[in-house]
Image (cartoon, rainbow, N blue to C red):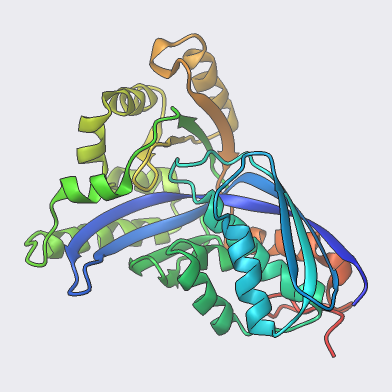
Length: 326
């Protein structure tokens, strides 16, 4: 196999809605969530060529321990029964520990790109199995767009694409412990609020799927973690309140700590940014602009960034097919 290269944009996600239900007998919490891909992205350069012995290396200026990129590469090389030299260069832009799924997205990027470069075809069912073993958010990034996540978040159901709405992300560099957030919620095997929570979640999902857009549906959204995380970190509650005074659709993503706000137009977002300039509530925070990304746009991005390595005719199969398959 000759040396092959690709540069990948690895997109982030937000949780438009997140409900935490009862624990199951295995000790995991049952979830209902809506994942949404957004345009904020890390960049991954990947090189792959043949070798007698496997070698997986990464240049990562952040120094992430046990990087999911490397773990995904090893898992995929095992699946393909392939010896190869694979090298990655990672440029982080997605904040770490902010509930935006950067590490999970990076892992999924490897699962989508490496088989194409290696000239192998791995069925999406096998990719999904590997993704689930790597992390509960990873399977979402194999398809992107807007999806309902059930159980641990790995059981996925696509929703209709939502409009490309602008959003503003506020990341306060607060490291929220997900384990503590779950513990503070106090959900048990016999939690009695699951039924009403599921009903309100379904109402939100129907509103979102009606085509009105995420901003319009946001009045019905919720994130159960906000009730406990905002008590532990009052700064996050203040950020959310300040954003609500400027726009709509304000939620925390995941278990935190990123707070996002949706806007009806880029002009509305620009006015919000100007209003936040010098505001003590967001002092020391990173303010990042992004937009919602549909499943069609997400998969189109992948076809463009792997274009030189894909079959040279129109092919709508997913994941993309390598031109080097034999």
